[in-house]
Image (tube, rainbow, N blue to C red; front, side):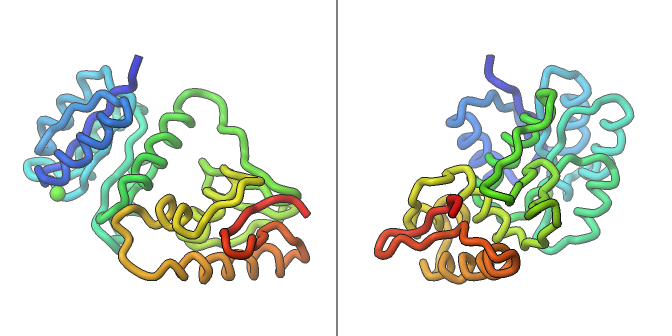
Length: 224
Ligand code: CA
């Protein structure tokens, strides 16, 4: 049975786009265009996950979340405006499971949805690892020999994608597509720049050789 997602979002164009993408991925989707009807629907049950915009008419996303949390532990991913740190923090404090910053690449949203549904589905996800490096995706943590490594979001996402494809050589284009999203406008050398960041924080800092360049092709993560 396919999982059911409730999308509470008042920007109709964005809501339609997200709905289409989610349906394409095999989810059932229901939309609410304001906070009030969104909360009613969410409380009526039958959903596996809620995508919740913060700026909503009638009832704000934060208020929807607070009222929903009195009765339900359904996973909630907040859709926040860029750089609205306050929203993110109070959203997570109020019991949101995760947030995605607008504008978002659909691939990123899909990955967050999968992670939220996975952690809900009982049992923690199997951590990704290579050599002494371990990534806990649900906790958004990376450790090397048990020692925490601070990564930016892009660095984390890039490492995540490499780890999911451990031992497989990935082209710059494939990495750009997966990590930056299909609507990315910029230079493909962003990949090289972020690979350099990762190498300095992981390989260099810990005396490892995990991230390998395959000349003329791309990158691969594997044990030495
Ligand atoms: Ca809105």
